[in-house]
Amino acid sequence: MFEIFEKYLTERIELSGGQLSLIRSLTAENKIARGALILREGEICRNIHFVIKGLLRLYRIDAKGNEHILRFAKENNWISDRGSYLSGAPSAANIEAIEESIILSWKKADFDLLLKELPAFRELMRSLSARIHIANLERLYSSISNSAEEKYILFIEKDRDICNRVPLYMVASYLGVTRETLSRIRRVSINK
Amino acid sequence: MFEIFEKYLTERIELSGGQLSLIRSLTAENKIARGALILREGEICRNIHFVIKGLLRLYRIDAKGNEHILRFAKENNWISDRGSYLSGAPSAANIEAIEESIILSWKKADFDLLLKELPAFRELMRSLSARIHIANLERLYSSISNSAEEKYILFIEKDRDICNRVPLYMVASYLGVTRETLSRIRRVSINK
DNA sequence: GCCCGAAAAGGACATTTGTCACTTAATTGC
DNA sequence: GCAATTAAGTGACAAATGTCCTTTTCGGGC
Image (cartoon, rainbow over the protein chains, first blue to last red):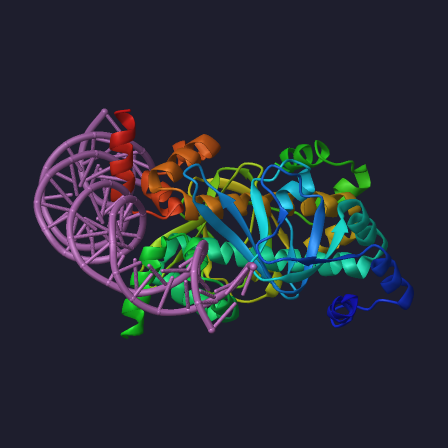
């Protein structure tokens, strides 16, 4: 499965055989069962992960016991609780496999080593980080400026694949509305 | 006014006199009148700014003509439309001085030069960027998981100073609710 | 310091969204 | 393949929020 990641990398940056070996030597591969958690609230997020296959979600549980999904991660996406990962503080979030998934994982110290030794890799992560930052701002804008229905339509347009792979109650949770509201939105949307 | 920025820098990173001179030589200082725009929707954001004094807001105007504030920037904050700044695409946002402000500005090419030449400076910007990223995620979480009242209370707790310096309709716009809703929230909050 | 315009508050009503309780449909795990 | 569980849809009602409009208060520019 490392080959898939190797392809991901070489499509984006130049790496020598030795550099790829270094990366490979620090990479762990894991199969995650549907429903299993790779990060639990209260734990420190000590690893960064790359999704080879499958779909995961990062979510929090609020004081009333409601789940709120902050992010989905599918094939070729990176996932971790960045705050906890960087600060070493306990995470407020859970990361769960929605589908049976295969992921690659790196311990923070190892990943830091890669960033230090491989400028191209560091630059890739930097530009990725900038892109995610901008995407998050877009989502924030959407969340303060759009109605629930508009948010739903935008989500379908932007992430049709994910929308089709997760149950509707997770879509609702991601959009910040109740399942019932999403149900209503869909009922009228279908009649348009 | 560069001295204030110099203090900001030297409190955070080590810089030689020569390095500071380099930075200074590329820095432009501007006074912005209350209500003036330093970035207009449709323009490309070609500069990055640092607020020495005053308060600015970054906002967008939606299809219905409503303003939505994505961010406030006060003393010691950086501000630009990052998406437009990095991609060179026209910005969808405006940046306006809410108070008469003094800012330092750098052209992208000059700022890139500083990042290239000064590793400590680059590292400072990187860690700042990570912090902002995490703060944005928190705000996103708040926006999908909290009621309008909870968001308002969180905003006061986190940014009391800004909350006291801007008109309430801007607080409402930042929170993603109407002025009337904020008015109601405050009415009941006061009676608690 | 005063005046004007902007901001805030308030009321009445409409719309959206949430909550709860229940039914129906779909999935999955054995 | 079936039973049990989970997800989705629905209706009735409550609560939150938006809209529109008027009144009151405040604040900045001259």
